[in-house]
Length: 341
Image (cartoon, rainbow, N blue to C red; front, side, top):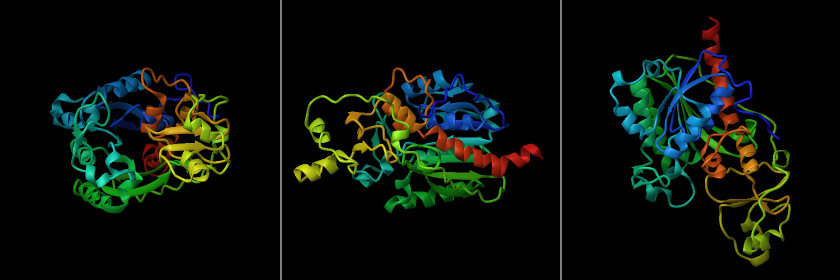
C-alpha cells in the first residue's frame, strides 16, 4: 500500500519554485507540487468546504475564498506582490460540462451550481476565466488540467480557442493527454494538461511508463458491507471478468444497468474514480472503504478530510502522484538549469 504521511513526511520545499493554485479544491494538485519540492504559496477556491479543507491541510500564506472572476477583479495593488512573481500558475477549471457522459452539449452556456453550497455559475467558460488570471498575474509557466473529453467531438473547438488565447498572451503552449495509471497512481484516470510558458523554453516532453498498480496491491483489508438488495444479490454472482454491476446484470438478467457502478478486481488497475457513482470490491463484494479511495487517489494517509466525504474529495482531485510526476519533469527539463546556472 501507499503509506506516506503529510505532516510527518519529508515534504519540504527544496527547490526555488513558487506555485499558486486556482480551482484548488481539496489540494490534490498542490500536494503533488509539494511532493516535487515546490513551494505552494496560495490558492483560489469558490467552495467554502473545500477551501476549509485546503487551508487545514496545506496552510497557504494567501487564500482567496471566492469565484475566480472576483479574484481577477481585485485591483493589482491590493494583491500580495508575490503573486506577480510566480513560477507556476496551476488550475483545474471545473470540467463536468466537457465530460463524455450524458448530453454534454446541452449544458454548455447554462448557469448551474457545481455542488450544493456554491454560487450559480457557468462552467464551460471557466477555462477562459483562468486565462484572464494568466493575463493578470503573468506567471512564467501555466499548468491547467481538464477531462479528456475536452479533446473529443465538438469540444475540440474550445481547445483551439484556449491555445489561441495562450498565444495572444505571449505563451508557447503544449497539450498533453496523460493517464495516471502510468504515473504511479492505481487508477486509470485520463486527463489533458495544458502546459504553457513565456520564457522560450524548449519543447517539454511528458512520457511516463511507471509499472501499473492493480487494486489488490493497494486495497484495505475490509470494505464497507452492503445492505441486502439488488446490488448485493448481483454481486454474489460476480466473476473475475466483471468490471461493473452492469456486466453482471447483463449476464444474469439480460439487461445492462448503470454506467457509474464499477467493480474493482484485484488483478486490474482501478477505473477512474469520480465524485459520484458507486464502487465495489471484487475481492469481497463490499463497497470501497475510505482507505481504498485514499490509496487509489494517492492522497496521504493523514490528510484531514473532515467534514467532507473522502469519496467526493478524492474523486474531484488530481492525484498528487500524477501532478508530482509532471512537476518533476518541469523542474528537470526547464527550471533546474536556471537554478544551477
